[in-house]
Image 1 (cartoon, helix red, strand yellow):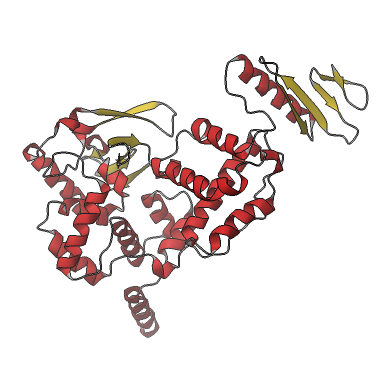
Image 2 (cartoon, rainbow, N blue to C red):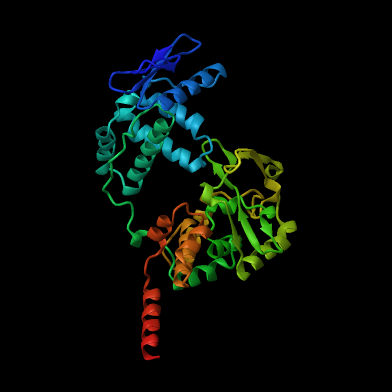
Amino acid sequence: MGKNLKGKECGKGICQRKDGSYYARFVDKRGKRHEKYFPTLPEARNWLEDARYNDKHGNTFIPSGKTVDQWFEYWVNHVVVDLAPNTRRNYQERYAHNIQPLIGDMLLSDVKPMHCKMVLNQMDAIYAGSTIRQAYITMGTMFKSAVMNGLLEKHPMDGVRYTKPVRAVSDIKFLTLEEQRKFLAVALNSHNYYQYALLLETGLRTGELIGLTWDAIDWEKRTLTVNKTLEYRHSQKVWRAGPPKTQHSYRTIPLTNRAYHILQEVWQQREQQKHAKILSQTLEYIDRRTGKQSVLAMRDLVFINWRTGEPAKNSSYDTHLYKLCDRAGIKRFCMHVLRHTYATRAIESGMQPKVLQKLLGHASIKTTMDRYVHVTDDSMLKAVQQFENSQSA
């Protein structure tokens, strides 16, 4: 039974050192000793209690003395299990290509800010700012989790920054009013017209559009609820359902008249659609809000590929878009540009950024402000005219 500097009992496995910190020691059922230092007695007791509980109930216990490689493997497979598929893929790619080669073999407790900065510096001359930002987020998130779980006393990313710009506002592609008019005129005769038009009315992400089911449409309230996504995993050749990108991506969107009529037309034509055998599948996924299992019934999907009778893959949408752009005589763009265009039109119409944040499902108002509160030529002309009218009134 350990004691503090005043001679009082600290509890089994804990004692106070001369510098005032507390030393906690634990031996697991395999006979391996784990030890850690804490600035306060409650922190030491909490760590020791968690360690004993995990050991007793068979949970994987990550002891001190583990490498960054070992922590990342445990973290990505057991801690952040509810990640969106694209986020998980980004974490794994950035770790394998940029983080692991430099610090993967290091002890987790030995990682310092200079090592994290070294990873970012190595990327600076080769990678785009957006990719460096992904590595920055990966390291920041995994090390923050290590701190929260008592494996590190201090976050090794404290004070670490990256300087390469991610993307200038002017680099975010959206359609001008004229380009949008030309695109819709050509798309009107295509089998995917309703999907493209709905994105321009709602700002859905592509995965949210592909995973949209009829039970998410409330005809009476004229709303659309985003609560799941669907994507095709080419490496595994399977469809995978999942939760929206973040907790804030769960949202209910009031439908414009145009969006409402689009969905009505698709509903009326659903019996004429070809239905492939794959639509009989039910896909399971974990609801990010409740932690419970949910299902996506593929037979209830709103949008089906007219030719195959299966859900349309993201890549097939982009391929089709390129053809339409060539016919319309405008520069090629991908599906996500339609979301950018929706946001741009919303800001031009005078929508408050905070409202747009909720409609887009952004976790932070900063994301909305940085990406979409930009000034277009059309909005500048409109603003000057409004200013002029107010002066002459």
